[in-house]
Image (cartoon, rainbow, N blue to C red; front, side, top):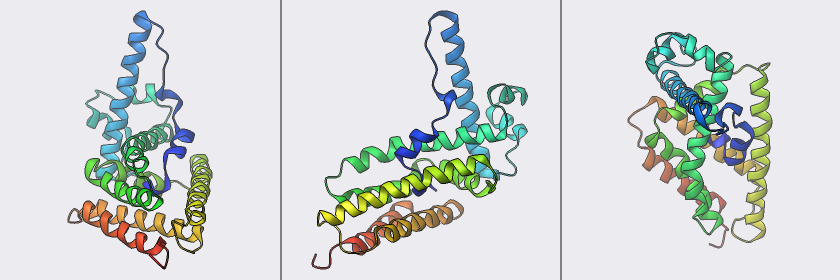
Amino acid sequence: MLARARARYLLLMEASHSTFKQDGGASASRTFTEAARRAQIVGAAIEVIAESGYAKASFTRIAKQAGLSSTGMISYHFSGKDDLMREVVGEVLRVADAYMRPRIEAQATASGRLRAYIESNIALLKEFPNHLPAMVEVFGNLRGEDPSLREFAAAMEAVVDLQVERMREAQEAGEFGEFDPRVMVMAIRGAIDGLVTRAAKDPRIDPDVCGRELADLFERATRKADR
């Protein structure tokens, strides 16, 4: 699912509880402690969701994973499961952004950035094995009427538009060949999502090999005919 969520989406989905003011003294100390506790709960939630699935990610299981004596601590920091899941998504995206952005921005060409985008998406499976499966589970269990799903859908559409525009700019600069940029973006996203879903369930898959082969495939698909 990380193909559906890049840096600009991260800005839209940043949870309000993730930042806090440092106002000095005991108050600042308590705020730091609360932030650390929230991070602990979110980390445990990611592990439980990845290992047991969204449906079985109860507060009881998460509290046990986090080493908490009761679920009350989770309820203190999060208003409900939806609130916690929103922060799970936000944490996965923060990790993905920190991992992917430098690798993408280090490339000087559109082709290089596309390869870095694809390979770093898949490489996340090895570096953070629980994060992407947790993301897949959360997205897969959101229902059509869920407000969070509508927010995600709107943000995703904005990301698609941005990626299409970048693809079109590369075409106009002569770096990519002639094709429908929106079709290409959707194909890339679908391929990454499918590979992430498969790799999360099959430990025999080598993320490095798969990422490289997928990048090779779309490098050939986007290059100009005379290259």
